[in-house]
Image (cartoon, rainbow, N blue to C red; front, side, top):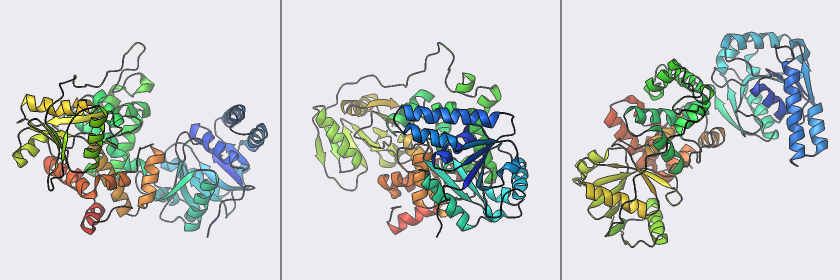
Length: 508
């Protein structure tokens, strides 16, 4: 049974940059005496001034009392040398992402701190096992990965290397919890949880863009307005910085021995090579220069409301469509026909939720030429936009009826090129697939991966919980069709998803 560090225990933070200062703020606010060290003269003292100013702002806004702000600020101390950390119970390293530099630091720390002192790295990508390999006592080293900005982001990944003692990981978990964070346990594998599982959010959008499925603004809008993601993938990559995002993707890809699931994008490499790094360079997928206007998503102009609307079955999409049509005064009929994958018909058009095939392939397989596919939405009742694709065999009048039906239900409609899986469905299926593989490989459990993705990157829903709501059989079908279309191992279905489908159980 482990417990959090006593509030009398000294917490040392090495590195006074944004992350180090943020971690120091969290520890001081949590009640600990905190020592902050940086090899840049005056950097630690300057960072402490900034932290104290933030505490004062919190007091001015009524979030904490003035006394609490003063006390928290007084617990911070700038130190100049490694030997000043002799009394630390926990040392958190937040320095440059370089294995050799981190190993050198921790080896030096072993000669300074007590045998009971826990050593932790805030690394987001370097193996804890590899760092610990250089130490005399690797059992006391673990990852304590905060997310930026550390005082605001709830998630902390507690990462165990091969030699990490369970009680060390347990103490860090309990301490992070006492600091008001939401910790999750993870095993030290490339990308840990978040940086690994998040890769498909960028990779699938880049693949669709490469194939000319739609422009960046349209794909971003679909992910925001249908998928309920806080930011679309292209604007998010621009915010992160393409140098950083591409480097993380490349690092994970290499660490997994060039697994095609993590293959970097040539489009993003071109941006990096050109110096178009996103917001910080005023140009990425979008132009951020003064006076530049952001492109708007492509939206199909308003079409006439179709006649003879029929909704099929009781799926969440059908139920939401019925409620939205009723709210807009649009007449329709319903049928409980079993065994059909049709969502609705409007005139001669047949609408289906995408299953990972192209609309053209669906039309061919079902011998239904006038097929229109509809993308996934997190909640079809509240979504404001839907992506569709139209089979090559579909005539224009039927396509207009299908789109007109969705518009009559209050959706803005973006017509993508006929790509398999559209954008939200293929992205969510791949996020769930990667999350399932992380669980299957013992990186973390299902609860941890969903918690990590909600809190670490603000996903609207944990990927496994989302897969449950879609239906694991449907997610498996989407992945199978993508694999069949592309002929790539990138879309192989996780053994754990397959197992759950065969067992008729979900990830709850």
